[in-house]
Image (cartoon, rainbow, N blue to C red; front, side):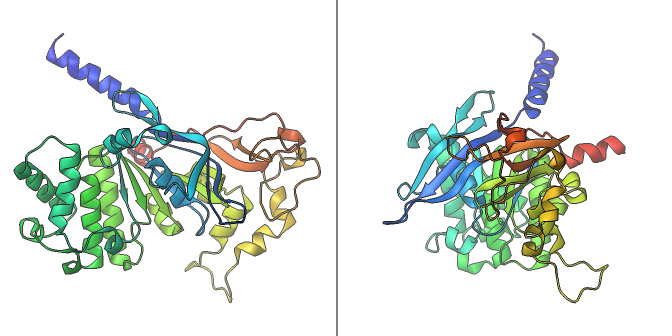
Length: 380
């Protein structure tokens, strides 16, 4: 086989894998011990999918299960008090092999955590160890996953700091976290996460507590690194402006379940679940003068909003935990048996009640290999 043939085969294989999910969450349920009371169900039947070179934004209010879902994929949920009740998180390795992340042993997980999958946590000051230099912390991550000498690890760390825009990386690699500003500490976290060339980056509110100019720089940096490194990103946030600018696909969560899943254009142009419409309606705009903003409650408490879903005239009703279940509910004798994540339009899924109209439907992870960059290049 000639060298050009080998390169062509590798390119074809890479192209095929790019159209297959890198990670798929299927019916994931996670609960936490509540002392003498009933367990708290933080995640209850979540389904989502992310593809290579794609940014999946997971949005929803605090406590909806966004962070628990992402941390479950890294097995970072403390057990006890946490527990995986059911479901699977399927991850596709570079050779195409698929593994269930929540079933891996700690030794097996260490090979993936930080190497195949990396995470940027919400607050860099609490994630960085204050008694070690930033260089020591980045180098530790490199030596754990790469067969390199200390000198080589040092150079990789310097290159990683340079890649995320930290000035004078050779000098600042010897500095401590308190000697960096909030934005620079966040860049250190990104450098640490990207030093081992992960294929999937979990960014849990990476711009929390940063001013808007630094937010823009951090998000642009992640977007650039995604395209140059052929990396997938799961972006966890409740900033819908950030989602509009950076996401390819959006997953809206509430009360531990997915209520809507669609590409970013469709979701903003045609939100189908009342909760999603409530989120979008609560955003102030510069084009309309209002005495007060619309609240989410005003939307979800309006019965007419639940009649706007395609198929509503046939008895298909958006799921909502604080609303009386439909009279024709066909609840199965299984966890989350009252809920179905249903495809209601092309490339658009909504969480609905298991009514008579959908009693035999089976929920499955939504598969949507949509990328804004591909659409933009196709129109050039």
